[in-house]
Amino acid sequence: VKSLGTGHPSTLITRTNIGDCLKQKCEYDNALVIYKDVYENLVKSLGTGHPSTLITRNNIADCLDMKGEYDNALIIYKDVYENQVKSLGTGHPSTLATCHNMADCLKNKGDYEEALIILATKPESIAKLFFTVDITQHQTPSQITSLNKFNFFSTDCSILKRFEITLHESK
Image (cartoon, rainbow, N blue to C red; front, top):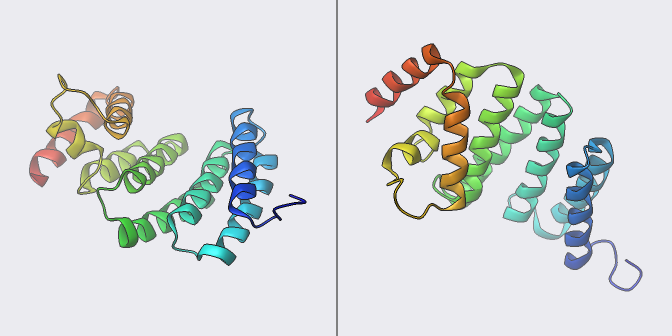
């Protein structure tokens, strides 16, 4: 920090890594302090719509989700998703990850049906990936995440049946 400064890209990467470690240790409040500071610095240097800035906001939402602040997390996830769609497109791995994070947050909140709706109705989302992927072939990390999330949500048969109907109608 002394030689590069608080806003230098290398400093911000290191601070993000520290925030990631704190998040992994379930020290969400400490991670949030770091992520919010990194976010402010990224906004100054790169702007609000830059992919790195959006990933940092996603990290903030992750911490809020883990703390049980689902509504606050969802506000951020939705905003990040909309910005990623504009700048990266619906099929970009970061956009898909944010879509998955929204569904995960809704699942954590207990809103399983809304989570499935998001997954089934986003054009490049988990539902499309799951049913268009040849599972005998090598999977990308996004596809593996999608398959894992689908498996988690599919444990309730009544919800799964509605999901299958929605998916069939969207084809």
